[in-house]
Length: 328
Image 1 (cartoon, rainbow, N blue to C red):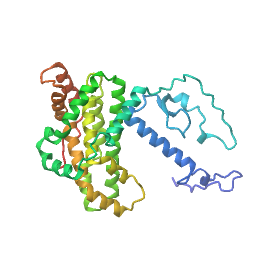
Image 2 (tube, rainbow, N blue to C red; image 1 turned 180 degrees about the horizontal axis):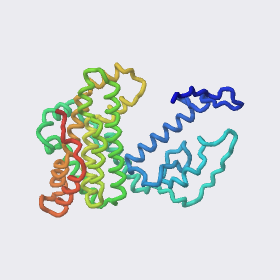
Image 3 (cartoon, one colour; image 1 turned 135 degrees about the horizontal axis):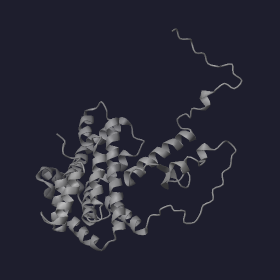
Image 4 (cartoon, rainbow, N blue to C red; image 1 turned 90 degrees about the vertical axis):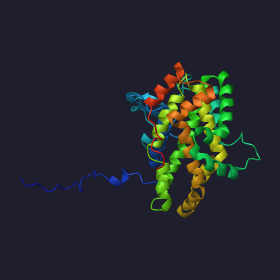
């Protein structure tokens, strides 16, 4: 059977104009779509994906960052600004106690504490970073107690401090810590792409493999469980303090500037690759399941064979180990 050539109805009184259906890059519609995607990624990293039958909705409009999981049938019926016809006006009536979950003061305080540690607030003003990095490079292969030896005491003190802290504050602390670490690892993946074709690209690929963020989240979620949360918060404190001592926050700010050329970024990475590798290797040690168990003994004085130790070990084994491969 011979096919017939299909002809488009160009002479119709109402021909379809595809140019009006395409939103060019930089358009308001395109920016709104990109924001929805960014906000969903951020929500899913921290809180997990919305349950089946629900989807993410911007409770106060796309311009705002506040989101919640809403039944699909309810959300699809809404008219957001991006779906309005030209000239159409929508009046939004906000009810008190609308059911939107507000973050508690304790949770927010925990987030703030994580940002302070990450930003270096608790580092002595006379701290010699270059000497510290040199000393760390000399002991990186000697194990977790040596690699994190300078912050073990800090972690023990934090563990003692956290005994009288409400779980909601520690949840906020761990969630923010995970967010800060995740942002760093994602920036690393971005640098892998930007350095493609250069000598440093192969080094960055080993430091920032695709699966690292996903599997790291699984392990940190174990630390967030109520029965482990105090020692979990102490471990995150050690990681954030280590990052602050290495200057990871300043490094991340420099890479996120956006104005530097590709060549300058490559040069910057080459100058700081030892610092980047040192931080990730240190984090590998302490977030390896065995590293976490070692920390459990050192921070909380919980020995092998106890119920909580065995339970912790079992839960860690269920979470994937993102650091088994090392750097090769």
